[in-house]
Length: 93
Image 1 (tube, rainbow, N blue to C red):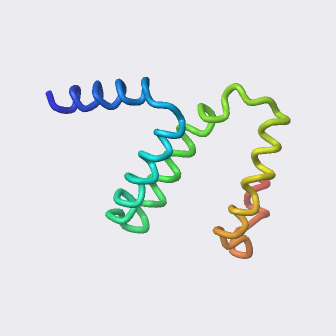
Image 2 (image 1 turned 60 degrees about the vertical axis):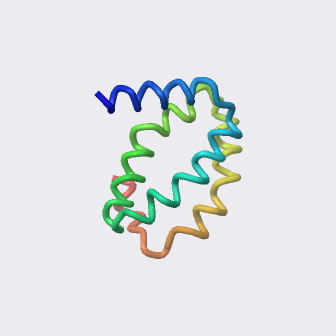
């Protein structure tokens, strides 16, 4: 019963919030959530989030817009990920 009510309240908020309000909500809620997760739970959460929703997030962007976005994001990705630990050859297969 409460799950349905929570979903309805969340959906109502999301349908009425603007992007800035949503970012503020994420800024507030995400650290609390991530601090409770183990390293493996974090990996699973982020992997599932991106695999399930990246296409939706990017939907409607042209190839050029996606390229520009990737150009903006790459410095952060390079800073945060140990690129020397990636098996680049395995990604090609």
